[in-house]
Image (cartoon, rainbow over all chains, first blue to last red; front, side):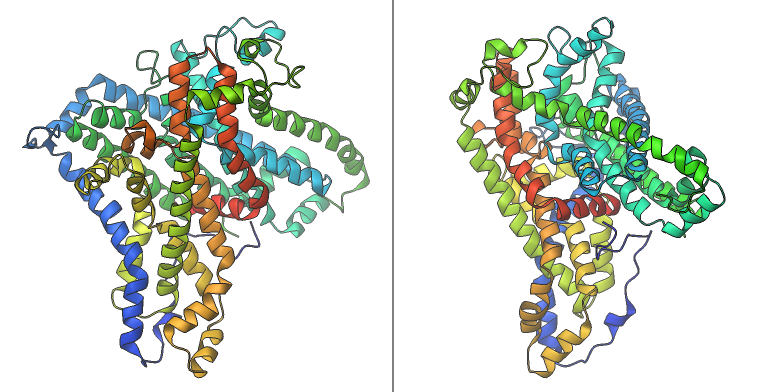
Length: 316
Length: 284
């Protein structure tokens, strides 16, 4: 990860000025070729991302159920989202999910990365690394199918396991708090490997001499990690939390398959509401309004990242 | 970790590795446990699949569940759909990202900066936010409930373009200039000099596209309404819905089958996959 040619991206990659000086021979042929090279990507991005973004904003200002012609709604769809209890609950659920899932994911990933960074045989280290990263290559939907069996209240392996230590069966998927916990656990189980890979990369970038100097000064164990490793790891921590937050705000597969948003609305997330409003109730206007609000939330997090990284992150 | 430690702390250190390795082993088992259970249970009869404690090594392994899943759903059709969608997207992305990445890195044209800015800006736009208009665009093209509707919108890749641009920028300029002196044209320089050097970058784009689209659920769920256009994850979720908790091992057999290609790619392409996942995540 560290010795790849892909440079780690700092906030805004600058255009290299070097490309500006080129001999002006065969200009037309080259320009035609450039247009051909760019066409599939640029046209595709305009049609399937740029226009749809504007489309979302426009649609959010209309009432539209696909069948009748669209009617201008002004801010009505947005007002609805602030009074619609399902939408409000979905935002609350998603934010709660985000905070708990990202915190748990980062904690697990960081602990494992630090533990793996210690002395051990090379084959063992790469075996651990493969194991922790393996869930990332599986389908979130299929894995949720598997987890639905494992967390079943009556015959699930999880309740059997906690029964071994004398804990009573937990209604993992059918009680409000437990259902949210289950969605978080299943999500984190699949996602922590991603933050883990980032931390492994970050730790590899810390020069060995710093650790040696710290050891000479007598810093060991937890004190060394808190005082030296963590500050040096702060850029990675920031990236891991921002990407973790952005991904968590888009959670869909796990609650859709595990609980279908239930019991009640206890695990209904924002993206589930977008899906249901648009493709089950054909309310394209309100679905778009919810989508735009989610987009604003994600943009705000990204903007916060840039601000924070300028102020707090310690770059070497 | 610390070679030059004073003796006292070296003694303390030599005790810790075993505790640390034991803890890591427990975590690795928790991580792989659900996968091991899935494989083990898929090798038992539906009636035995409820047995607790779960048998990790089945005493009487049977392929009944695998025969069962082929009877319940058209596994071949689902796999064919998934393979078609995934392969075409992976190849398509390698082509579009390779070409556009090269243009942004090495060719001169007007509006280069704003166009690249557009590509970078769309990297942050989540699919879920644009899905309603994308659905409408596809509907107007008559592409909803077709595999092409999944494939075509996935051809352009902002991240892949960005990655390939970095790759081409990292290659020495002299190579192209030498070829130019030998009389090679712009296309020739790309095709014979730079493109072959870009293979590792293209591998990352391809492996990443495979991993993402083989497992993709959200878009197929919205776009594909008739079951003959389902991909594997969609087919498995609806199989579980139809069977309920009656035949766990049959559903799990389906899950195992759908995992196999992903595991194969994990085995042979772990390095590009790791690099891709981390850099894609960082640059999203």
